[in-house]
Length: 335
Length: 299
View 1: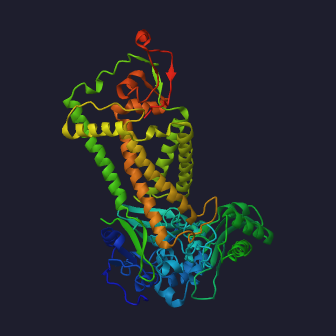
View 2: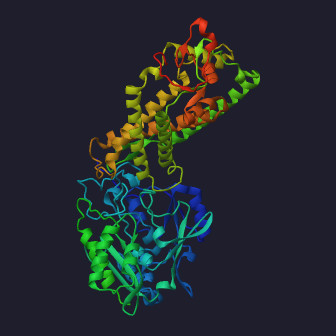
View 3: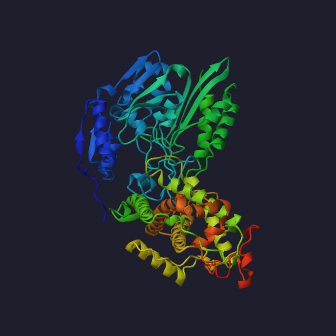
């Protein structure tokens, strides 16, 4: 008998106005609590009755989590800043256009108006076995339904799998990794700062979490240093249709040039692993070289070998896709 | 207290996933509780019978024995410590992530499990082919000794129990409990390797069992694992107890002293020396070195 899933299970709704109050609530409810930012990930879960939290902590009224703050050290973006604001902010467009560009590729204008940067970074994976309520590893079970030889796994990962083969769906994550961003996390023990690439959790470490956030912690802001301000940027998102779709794969690069030579570079791809992947070996490889197409091809090939990329049953196409996106991200930047 | 973890599939059917982690805590509490109770009991007993730990050993009269008696050959000691190391690695990689110490544990876990499986296989072959397989078997004398010792504990009697062969009855019981838990964890663990990418192939989770069948495999693996928690806690406790140090030392150096041998073992059941004719009493011992014998009557 089919299960009807159109009514959200009951929960207690809290709408704190301060971060500390939100953290206190999350500490109180632990694993039974749920952080609601834009709601675009949360309401899917709730309406499908797959996640049934006891308490939902809505951050909409926490003003200190909103807005873009510019300083001499760079820029700090509150986790509750809408994606629309990130994609249209003049300072970001001028200095960190790769982030604005990535934000502009997220979903649709309506979703960008409601969705937040913190939510986009912290959202759960879109593996449909998991999202459909299968008792997989990520749901606390003991199998990956997407990883079998007969599974539908076209969108799944080609590297970084550890039992779970789902990918991280965030469009903004690779851009922030390329910009050398730091994520500010606040919990009962105070504040801590992690590098962008360290914010995301490998399933080898914890298969039930996408990020390092503990149940009583909040991502409060994203700090972007001036290091890469005004560098040559490249962002590309490959998707099955040109709007309102999750990425099959995305790439972001920040490259500093000096006299036609790559002086420094940061590259990240998403949609290849359960977490966004920074390509440090490729970064080292291209430094001191001209950004030619030949270099791009070699770097693309290196990105596959260095990540030990292996396709699943239905996603062989991701190998040439990754190779070509990395190639284009090197060839296509303007220093 | 929930014993099993179950999850619902999209049709609302419950699928068995594994044991509840409550059982892990129960195993830890039970192991530590046993240790605490035994510690208090042993202390009270030692206070009540001063000098009992220093009771005189049996005379070596009638036996031609060396000063040091080999209890564990080098191959057995290497096996023991290799098994211990892999067991600790397995328990740490299995249970630390559950209590919040997070690291990439899966690969370490299955590799350690594979090493354990190989060492156990070696041990089974060695014990069957080159050693006296029945030395670890519980016989009538062991049952009698066990009953007497239990009776002594419960009634506070001091009736002397028959001495053990090479392995005392409590060691045999521990060995058999560890065998059941260990073999259960190993057999199910080897099956579970089909569900992850290993050196031997990519994950093929649908192979062999249905979801429900795999649930049973995970439950058995979990039961074996939590059983080993209790067993390892108690084993380490006894290994570090001063009154058992003479045995622990033999796992490092291989030998026990002639005095310990005569104090704790029955030379008729663990034969390591030759019985002398009545007229040869002056040669009651020899200090010339190490003797080792599995012995036909070594039990």
